[in-house]
Image (tube, rainbow over all chains, first blue to last red; front, side, top):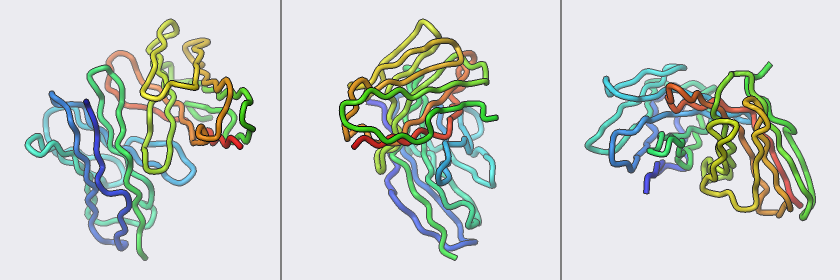
Length: 112
Length: 114
């Protein structure tokens, strides 16, 4: 079955430190991949997306993600986190049935 | 005004009551979705609709029903609410053509069933 896995439930990083959030997918073909962010009390907002082409994609708020077919991964990165980045992050994929399937999310906390 | 509006934003109800969550959108999108969010489980798809005459069950449709009253309106009903339906519910929309898969979310409806 098609699935998206986020192995880290909760991550804490210091402000100014680098960040990497992991995402693995299980699909036969190359899926469309997404990262969404949910700030407290808010809906989800798209950070970035990968459809094809360059495997390193840039998004909003200084985030980037790299698609690695050999590892079935689409990890989210940011070189230097800010306190306002504290939120929950969801990796997602567009399935063959044109539905978006989400991972279970990773909650990011920022240490002052 | 928000592009995707959900009402009510918060609701507390009792077991056995009928509840309707409403969603309206001004994005002109054909596709609409209802998701449920529970801690540690991410977002799970309840129902989705690719146009007014098309309704499809998602992965957790039991206990829920939907109505697509117009292109812009998609309602979720709990005919007889139970406590394990306590959750945060999100409506979302996406374009039909081209299908980029990008979702646009409402701000959520928090439902508590006592």
